Length: 413
Image (cartoon, rainbow, N blue to C red; front, side):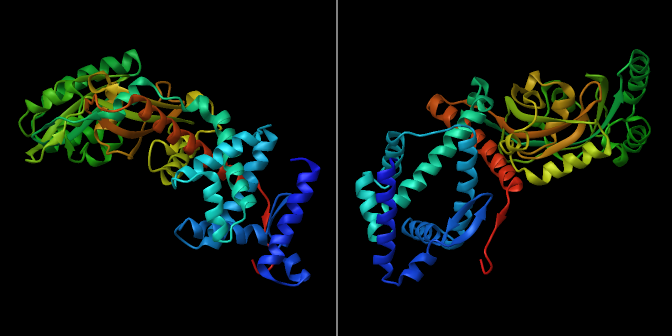
């Protein structure tokens, strides 16, 4: 904006405040007193009034003044970050943004501004709201877009629907024998042959407590009920052939051998989805099974509800520290398959480490997928997934900006 237009805008804004309020010069001046300081920037009473009126006009839920102050503080941080990154907008981009926002109400920007004016909202306030939003969107797109790309497999997962079969769930116990060296592998094979011959529940529980490397050893290897369809085919096919008390043949896993005992099998009578692929995320936390790594995992678990939330956690970490995959059930590695079989969507396991033990695997189930539908736009799915990931990164970045900022309020605010 040119100096002349800036002076005109400032004069018009002051005149509008005085005209609307019909107050003295001193009271008008108070409109521009700060209600918050955000680093070196301020939020004025006038801006707060305008944004609250704007939210009221949009029929936004909640306390409009409290929400307005929160959003204005966030916008100061967002626009400051955009300025540092060199992000700029043209007048044409801002106008296009105003048109896009107004189109949500089936109005042109001019019609929308006129409607806001009837609610006491100044056109410059609406323009600034749109401009701030566009700056932030441009910044997070540049900063996180390359890390939020969506694969074809992830699109397949998102648009798959389900066939169903009669529901079967199983109650298993497990023994996981470590086989990470040639010596331990030989010992594990010998012991696995002995355990496979067990045919009583107490004997298997005793073996689990003595020899298993799984966290379930303290429970005698007992696992909770799980749908049979959650298990990989190489395990579920063996489990179906068991009678209660019988044990599977030894099942090789990466650096381990697993055995399962059937404690109970139940047909639920309720159709359940038959998974053909599984989507999951792994966040690798340095330190293996150290107390520090486990404590960090507990903190993360308390912060996240979905796999998308992990993008915010990992935004400042090396890209290879967070992996998200969609893999056919039959192609899952045994140790990951077993952990995922016990999880519902959004649940977490911290029972695994990387092969060398140097990192704890924070494993989260994103979802199980079924038959592909041909009636969904792949590009729309791609855009939705991309936007979800960028938003998750953006939320984490904004939280970081808030944590680093100096935000103060005049007395009484």
